[in-house]
Length: 147
Image (cartoon, rainbow, N blue to C red; front, side, top):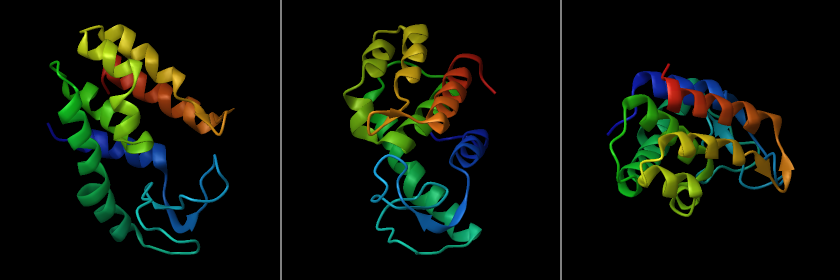
């Protein structure tokens, strides 16, 4: 599956946009983030414009998340469920999906149980981050109810 335009828009909304690199909220340092959540080889004070940010999102970052979801999810998904999972993986990484109870429940066809697992992923450096609380609520809502 591929992420829909609505899914891309959701990721952009949840990530926001920054034209200058900023430190990770959990570590106060690396990884630095730029554009719409791009972290690969980003250095402090690096800059980008919206066109570059969109390119990274669509052609580098989202495809990695899509590949992870497509590889590890073994049950049928609706487009909204796929998009919510891609947003989740985009934010956390494929490794966290692979080892998650969310994936175990989903692959056991417990879609409602999997949706409840989103809310567990709200911590950075052992602290609840309000932005992650909002993000996981949105992802769970899209996963269960669509757009």
